[in-house]
Length: 252
Ligand SMILES: [Zn+2]
Image (cartoon, rainbow, N blue to C red; front, top):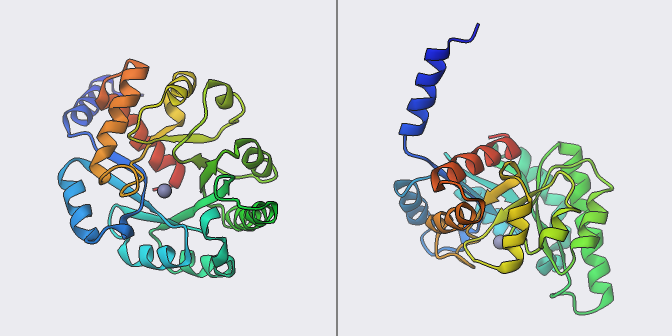
């Protein structure tokens, strides 16, 4: 039988403890002093950081930075398809490091596709990495720029958990998103506002994409404020729910 008093007390202790934020997508290895950035983030209320790879160089650097509460995903993104031979190295990197918890960022980017062959090559590498993720039962972090329909169609060939980082779609796009997650950057946009209105909090994560977009992982609080304002929730609720989503999605 559930002890009502006990569970209420547990809940109270949970909401009294400081809410921890999760930055579901950043690039810690791109900072000059990554460990300083991590330390400052944890002192400022971050609970989890997921740093994303994209090139062969990034993937190697991330493996050296991950540690307690700092996780990594590795992959070859559409901007680095010249590194396509490194897809073969991903399995080894993942299996030798328990803090590497997924594959990313991977996907399609029409903006960097200079010719159709290039875009076809992006698709090939994307599929190859999805196969790997499916075989290892790992989640994927998706990079999709001006390519949502193609990304969704290829994803549909696999049984896979996916999170769309820096989601750029609107409310109509959300209808096509099946069970996938979206991640919200610290940047307002009217399109994304309509998307956030439409999707449930149980499928939202927060990110900074720092140092590319946010200055550092503490900017995740701005992402939380954006979601809180749109959803009409307390920032604390958004932080709690989105951190839970990150834990469930990445199995951490
Ligand atoms: Zn990124």
